[in-house]
Length: 99
Image 1 (cartoon, helix red, strand yellow):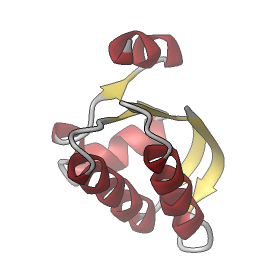
Image 2 (tube, one colour):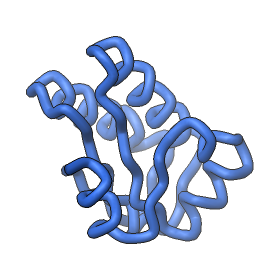
Image 3 (cartoon, rainbow, N blue to C red):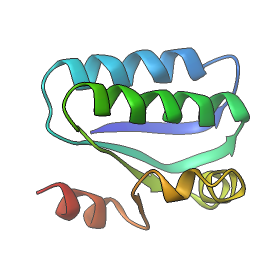
C-alpha cells in the first residue's frame, strides 16, 4: 500500500509514478493507493495512474486500487479513468478487495 497526501501535480507526479513502479516490481499481486487525503489532483497525476494501470497489466495483471478523495474521484470521473481503475471510498474497502 502507498499513501499520498496533499497535492499531486507536475512537481511530484514523477515520484508517484516511480513509487508505484517500485511497489509493483516488488511482486505485490495488487496495489492499493491511499489517496484519501489528496487535496488537489492535476492531469499529471492522472497520467501517473494511467501508467500505473498499464504497468500492472504488463506484469501479468496486477491491479491498482485507488482510495479516492473527492478531488481525486472528480478528476478520475471527468477523464473516465474511474472506468479503468477500481475506486474505493475507504481504505478498508480497498484492502478487502485485494484480499
